[in-house]
Amino acid sequence: METKQIKIIIVDDHPVVLQGFEYMLQDIPDIQFAGKFADAASTLGYLRHNAVDVVLLDINLPDKNGIDACIEIKQINPDIRVIAISNINEYSIIQRMLNSGACGYLLKNASADEVISSIGKAMSGGVTLSKGIQDILNDHDSGDLPVVTRREKEVLALLANGLSSVEIGEKIFISPLTVESHRRNLLQKFKVTNVAALVHKATEMKYI
Amino acid sequence: METKQIKIIIVDDHPVVLQGFEYMLQDIPDIQFAGKFADAASTLGYLRHNAVDVVLLDINLPDKNGIDACIEIKQINPDIRVIAISNINEYSIIQRMLNSGACGYLLKNASADEVISSIGKAMSGGVTLSKGIQDILNDHDSGDLPVVTRREKEVLALLANGLSSVEIGEKIFISPLTVESHRRNLLQKFKVTNVAALVHKATEMKYI
DNA sequence: ATAGATATCCCCGAAAACAATGATTTTTCT
DNA sequence: AGAAAAATCATTGTTTTCGGGGATATCTAT
Image 1 (cartoon, each protein chain N blue to C red):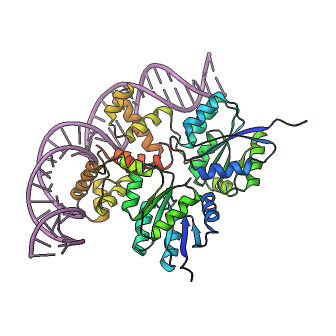
Image 2: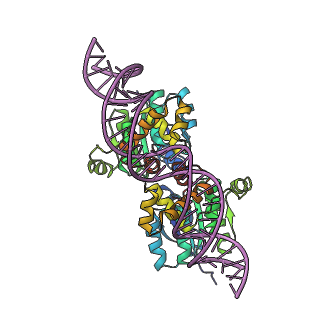
Image 3: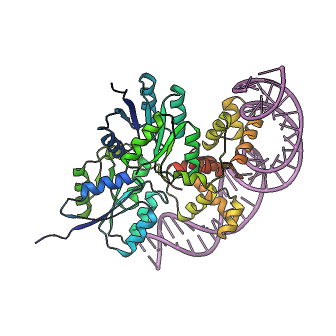
């Protein structure tokens, strides 16, 4: 009797990387390579109509960041195991990726063995991090990651587009005073003193 | 008699990509593969002490954007031919990369033939663009690219860090009034109405 | 149903940003 | 050397932000 194959797709905007992973995985008996995608939109479209076990998900996508993409994938089907792949070894990104439901974080220079074992662990409910990632996480107390609410995020994006508090208020039908509250909370959460720095920091941390 | 080999280095923060290019080029007789680098700092350090003919340069580097890196490479030695490699097919980036002295722009999914022919053309003084890139350039009038001066760029970076006009003035020893002039010029050049939008747009366009 | 988080709205005063011009001095390039 | 571009400083006035408070709602999950 044979066990069911693990259906897997890969999402990355680098064709080289897609090729590399496909080549790496195509001969593994337990793994069924089900597709390659270069952006979030096509991936989500596919996932809405096709069953998949594991998604290898890059953090840098052209149309959306990997964190939001991960959240949306989990909304479509919480059982899908998402493994983040990236070169970024910045604490804030890794941490938030895991908070968003990813069950692993691989660097792109991971070996084939490492990738395959991650997939195995992911299927059995475990979590895998690339070598070194664990160290990065340990070096930080988890107190310094801004947690922004839905509304705050909305305001943040509009601020980045140059709208004033009044304009934002008009746009999303709330009082400008409320906008200023959100704005003040954002400044506090990101520990900055004006919107310019807020936008910069939030962009770097991929909140926008 | 044999012609002199072309010395070439590759700069990219993706190990997979580095490997791919090395593999692709290692057996070409006219090409001497001289090194792989993952960031701008180590590349510039190497170039200051070693002669190189061609640099394949990624636009996304961890410590600096490819545009600035290219400018600095050309300062070290204007004879070095820089070929940009990237997935980004955004007009502003391509155009500015070429303005900065790059003599080619390849997408990362370029074929081996395409890469090798680009290197050849680069050595003979020509310019190569990947398929499709030329079309992108033609679709734009070259009027909409902000040209920022050195001082403006300096101010821009400090603005992004959250400094006020007064603070910036103190920091770079000019009157706050002058800072506001630069700031106003930046707002005009980027066609935005406040600093938040300026920082956002400038970051997207890799001016920061 | 009740606590805790989130979203909403309010007031005030100081500080900063923005808008519209204009002018002078340096640099830079041809 | 001369023109063009960049950098500098200035005036005046209006709008917006920011920081310090606080007060209700509304949602959410146990």
